[in-house]
Structure formats: C-alpha cells, structure tokens
Length: 255
Image: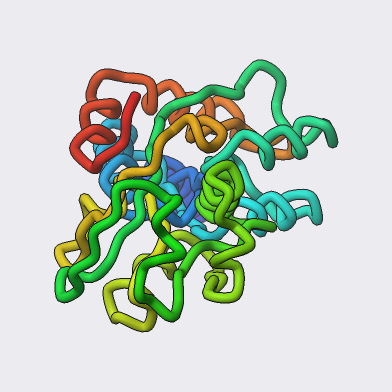
C-alpha cells in the first residue's frame, strides 16, 4: 500500500512539474493588423518588442487599411489595428470596436511621385503631370488604400485629376504600387516617402506638397474584442518610446 502511495505521489509530482514547465514556456500571441506600408518597419519593431517581452509573440497581418478595417468590422480576431489614415480608425470607433482610451498616433509620412531608377522624368508640380509622356500611373485604390486616397486628393486639388484619370492603374495596397514601379509595369506611381527608403530600385520624381492632401498620420488602437488588452496596450506604449520612434525614423517615417 505504501509502495502504491509513493508511485501516485511521484506521478503527481511529474504532472505538476510538466504543467508548470508548460505554463512557463507558453507564449501569449498578439494579433496585429497593419497597413502594408508598415511591413518593413513593423518587422523590426516587433522583433525589438519581443526581445523585451520574451513571453509574447506578435503575429502580423498586412493589407490595405480599408480592407483590414472591414475584416475587423466583420469579426476578425484582431488585438491591435495600425492604420495608414484616420478615416478607417474613425469608422471602427463609430462602431464601438476600439478599446476605450487606447487610440494613439505613432507615426507620420509624406507622399511622393516615383519612378524606377531606369527612367528619367522631371516635373516641378502636379500641374505638369498631364504633359508627362507616360501611359500608366500607379496608385492605390482610393476606396480602400490611404496612399491612393491622398494621391487622389492631391490630383484633384491640383486640377489634373480628369486629365490623367484614364492613365491610372489602381493597386490593392501601397506595397503593390511600389512593386509595379520597381518592375516597370507602370512608368510612375504615387508612394510614401518611406517606400523610397526601403527600395533600391526607385527614385523620387516629385515630392507632393502636403497642403494638397489630408495629413498622413498613422493611428493605432487596441480592439474592444481583444482578450489580451494589457499586453496589446504594452505594445502601443512601446511604439511611443524613444527606441521605437528612432526605428521609425530610420525607415523614413516622421514622429
């Protein structure tokens, strides 16, 4: 009987030790949905955050801000949303999908007209764009891609939208626009300044006057449905640190 008791005690200790070990090594997953223009810098930021929080794993989903917001509205399991404009975050706020007092602005950007390095274009303003000898101009679909919306605003403010509308090629997100320009599928296109920072194949044709479009600021917020709000809030706090802001600056973003 005593021998049986010792066996049961040993088994219990093994089970307890196994559970403790599993709990100690189990990592908390945080799901981030982020604008495609953040893909390179966010990879670096998440790496730094995970070094400081070894029990956390950040899973990333990139896309056009509008499409990501629609996914969240339809119930996609997201902990943190990082948008390339305020409008889509506003829409989620109107639906009460943001956790209270978590919304922040963490980065800025600017818009530029770019070409591949193999091309040679020169204009001094968007008013000259219709005179440029190009067949296609890439920009994100203004309905869902903030970079495309900003480009549309700038073209309309410059009075040339109707003159170039038949040349516009809509892309699914900012990254695809950059790819079109790099591969020369289109001669020129509208991208963020940060995109030029991460591409060795493109160059600036024209820096777009920021007065021609809405301010390009990136908001982030924890979702009301998140089951890991404290950890998600910790990531947003990290985005505002000097370290994170320095990384953003290295990748071409403003703070």
